[in-house]
Length: 113
Image (tube, rainbow, N blue to C red; front, side):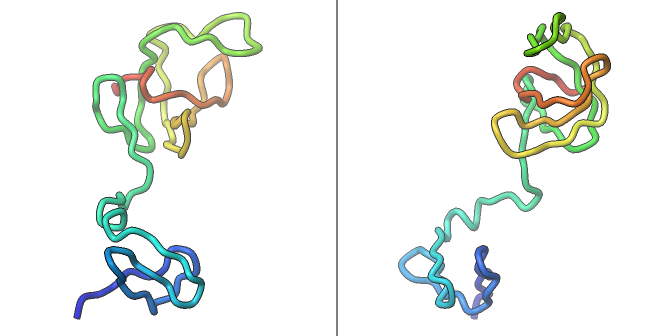
């Protein structure tokens, strides 16, 4: 007998499979079996401008000037950012940029060092 995953909503272990979906009888939540198979275990997956995988704690370089709301100067191309943290969302890098403070960046505008 195969091991079925626990319900992601309530954590119930009494899930069953029905026509390609996993179903929880306790809370009624349904989710795709295909989605369960391809979901990454480590969480957020982000790639830099060159397609390299980024990880928490990496150092990156900004590849183009980025305008910052409320600041008179942009973040210049070539600015190094150390110790990034990956988060969910459109701006998927949380970091602290010297001279600007904490901010979020898009991974498409950086490259891994």
